[in-house]
Image (cartoon, rainbow, N blue to C red; front, side, top):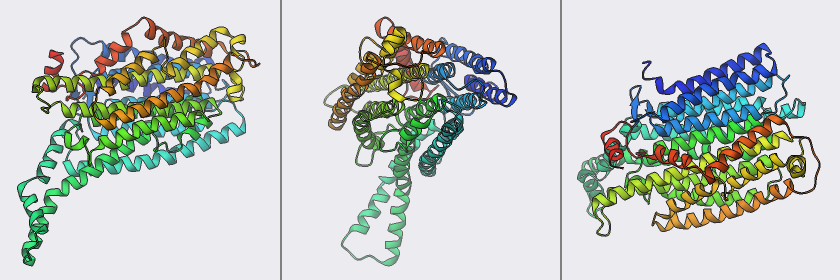
Length: 561
């Protein structure tokens, strides 16, 4: 059992240190040690995730009776969550004498542990435990996370927590109902068994006895009552599993999209983000979103990629493609009207979620095509093209998520460094007050909009080329829609840059938050200019994503790559 739980070591460390933060809040620990406590645990967790990612010969496996996945995809999500948590803890401006600061940081770490569990899901039970833990802990983090100790700030935190739990509770109901229908149709909670069971569901639906019964009932001849009842029973038995599976898959998709924050399933997240403090914003907009994207990849690319499940008229891929493209454009347009930095970041995150969903839909489409012969192309070549293109699309979704997470935390840290409660006005004149912080803010903003020379540009290029590889007309139309949304988003962020280098007076920047912004900007700039490290990491994480971890198919595919 201990060996089976070994992959959860980073999540266990993060969760344990989150509990220590809560104890520190209870004991009234001094501000310095209270902030150092989570950083020690996050350092250990990052080392554990790095060791797993760099392990030689890691081809993936399933442990704990198939409940946990061990592969580089999970290790990448672990490392991303830990880096985001560490940056948030360092930059959080929560007053040192306020016990809610350690409490908010503790719940932020617990939410991170839940996201790390969800990213390793090998079955629906693990996925639901992880994502619900992250969601509930985020609600508690929101209730305590605020920028000052004023009573209005306290009320805002409680209101944000209520709004969050109400909106995400609806998403949880949809997700749980969908999982229940899928399990009822297939008889398994194990993700690695789900793909084969889906095929058998459609075989039963298309079986000769079921189809013959349907044809008999549709015939013009009058039938005896007993024969009619028998034919109805045969038809219902043949299609019952599919009648549960199809709506179940769509409900699971809707539930995870609500957690990812894609339009129209935002569930009031922008209003929540506007009231949240830095820790609460990171938990709601980055940690839970990361868990949702990981779950979408684990369920829909790795498992539910059969052609009958992806394609229309009832496939999930059509709905996901439309939601991805429309969400990106609509959220970008909403971002142009945002008057607060956190609302602008929240709309940007929703647009980025739309881009990720579009890439995930394209990836599943590629994998679905992998086993099909088309236009005289040899089967072996088509198989390799489908899986390679699917991995490239998943890598693009991962790269976009990583860049957004680092850039968003960098912008939040820069805002925290000069925070006086005036929104965008706080950054006005920042170029004269602190040229270093202003330059770091520019780098983070350029990364968010996908502009050179930051890592955002190659990440956006990867996304466009990967999705454009799909010849589906709908996918390409939604790519054009999302591309327009990306251009609008860049326009929305232009006013932040103009304000930073325009006239204005404000507070002197804090050293700690400035350091966080500079460090994250250096990572984004270095990855864009010199390093291939980030791109190699996301490509390795996406390798073999459509195969069961530890399965023969994944081993053979990774050996031939």
